[in-house]
Length: 146
Image (cartoon, rainbow, N blue to C red; front, top):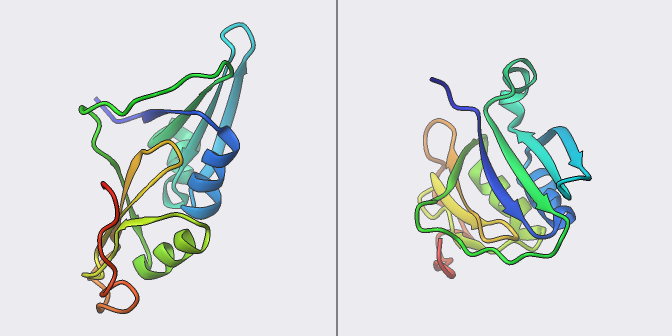
């Protein structure tokens, strides 16, 4: 057995791609449009997983965009996606500058949580040792649920 992907439904494909790709840093690997089913699938991978994604189509995040308007509620059986980042402070600053709320700031220099436009919780973990605590993160409170 091996992990392939996690599918998340999105309501605004452009806003979702801006979050997942432009701000978080994932890369679009492939896209499939199904006119009969009226949906679009977009498969994303982290830069460090690009070669594996190209070869094995894993590990990936699959964004599913149904063309007909729908409302989705988060299920309690889904917690979050997690990614290691080279610099958690820089990643959080890039997200914050892009208008993303940092729900759980990296006060410890090691872990943060944000949410996608569709409310998917994303955990960011510092690669290697924790960074030294720094402002504005140290003084920033938790915001909302994470």
